[in-house]
Length: 217
Image 1: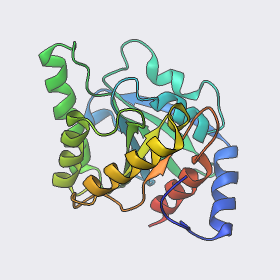
Image 2: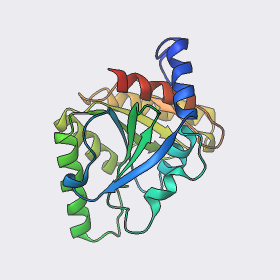
Image 3: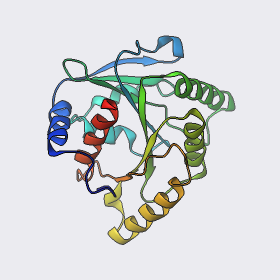
């Protein structure tokens, strides 16, 4: 579910469906910028608070059940995790470290900020970031901080609500309206919002199409 009537043609939607039904592989984890893969294909990044359902959404988008487990391996939580999509290689998905960990040591949070800020500012092939927000809670201050970081880095992003099946449709509509109104005040925010569910598949097809569309821009 999104608030836009059409992202693109049926042909693009079908192309996206076939792309994500094809080869997808975990490429590498990058703890520092010097470990990033060569910037030779478009990249789409996923950002979100800890426990927002990022791994589940990545698995749903890629039609896999365990793909994102690679990024949950102990020691990789503060790294950028890359996944190659397509054969021939069409784009890369970037699983960014979860944010909003209240119990994390300050030095870990500081390293996260430096890594992410430098990545966002310097990655020319980064076409879009998806900012994941739990539909049950809406935007939190830490989400707003990341949105502002994206604004300053001039990186276009979509807000994606996760776990939309966990609340009533009326509550979901209210959250969408509130998030849309707030996102509209951010210069780098893309006007299209998505409501998704990794369990029911709601919004997954539309999000796949949006990812491919952004990569082709």
